[in-house]
Image (cartoon, rainbow, N blue to C red):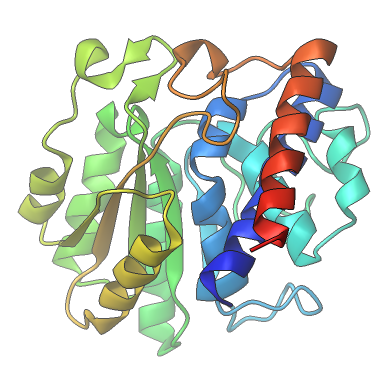
Amino acid sequence: MDKLELQKKALQVRKGIIEGVHSAKCGHPGGSLSAADLFTYLYFEEMNIDPKHPDDPERDRFVLSKGHTAPGLYSALANRGYFPVEELKTLRHVGSNLQGHPCLGHTPGVDMSSGSLGQGISAAVGMALGAKRKGSSLRVYTLLGDGEIEEGQVWEAAMFAGFRKLSNLVVIVDNNGLQIDGPIDEVNSPYPIDKKFEAFNFNVINVADGNDFDQLRDAFAKAREEKERPTAIIMKTLKGKGVSYMEGSVGWHGKAPNDAEYEIAMNELNEEEKRLCQM
């Protein structure tokens, strides 16, 4: 899929995020939007998956370690064909398949329950180890928040992955610079992120703009070339990317737009879609 088509898909993912959190009247749009391009690239380009066969034992796996950004994952899954896009409006509703955090066995396409920060990477490491021992060629991807990596279990998992040379594991850090309490470098700075993963024997790839598909494509291509170590992709992103009043604002970490804000957001995304369709 070329860059323009990926950009169009990412817009659909972003619209699904806004639809979901607005309908739920709660949720986490900021980090979902910053990672929307990453979700799009994984599910429409990078991963070996098939929505018609969601339980294929040889499929690639994805673990959303920063589970509160489930609106972004759900929107990518819906747009990829795992379930109807209309279901995004049921986010967090009683009886919905789309709860506030991903739930294994409950939502089509979800490979692991997550939500308690710091723990998803451990599950991904276990999946990668299991695949290695079985001789499977599947790859495992996990997305962490930059605030999340302030937690210690992340580094226990990284130490193990590096020691076991899990070259089938790709850890992605969404470095949007903001967490619920403010800028990450003021709350409990995890910097330098790249040097920490290097210390645990990771192949580290820094992405200057994780909202750019050319840079994402290059990073994942380099990750596939690595045959001896796990890879960490550290991508700089913009929190709230795609919605003007959410961009770079910590206040949109975990709240839903009201009706007026919803209209503004959807109008902006629709206008950008029109622009792309004219290219």
